Each structure stands twice: as structure tokens, then as C-alpha cells.
Image (cartoon, helix red, strand yellow):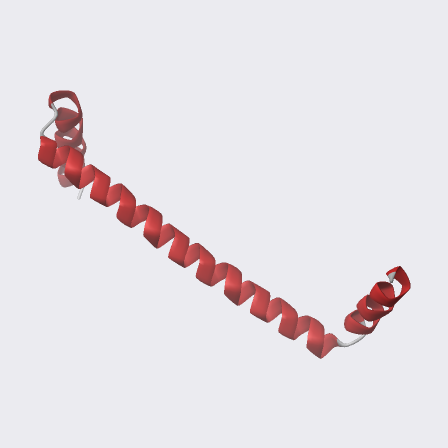
Length: 75
């Protein structure tokens, strides 16, 4: 079993097209996964931030107002 896995690996490495194709597909999958994951996390963070701002919690609401004011001043 081990010998066949090593033989398959050596055959894979000897074919530059297969290595390039495998790396291309792997890179595309990682990039797509990163983009989807970052979008989901950003959407969740914005959703929660909106809910906190809507609840008008005194301490957190003031902090959010300060951040928004800072952003507006530095545009």
C-alpha cells in the first residue's frame, strides 16, 4: 500500500501539467473560500453592530458614535 502511494506521488510530480493544474485548482478553492468566509464574517459583524446601535446601549452607542465621528472627520 505504501509503495503504491509513493509510486503515484512520483508519477504525479513528474508531470508538470498535473502539478500546475492541481495547484491552480487548489489556489482557486482557497481564494473562493477566503472570499466567502470574509463576506460572511463581515456581514455578521455589520448585522450585530446594527443591532447594537439600534438597541441604543449607552456605553456601546457612544463608542459607535465616536467611531463614526472619527471616520467622518478623516474622510
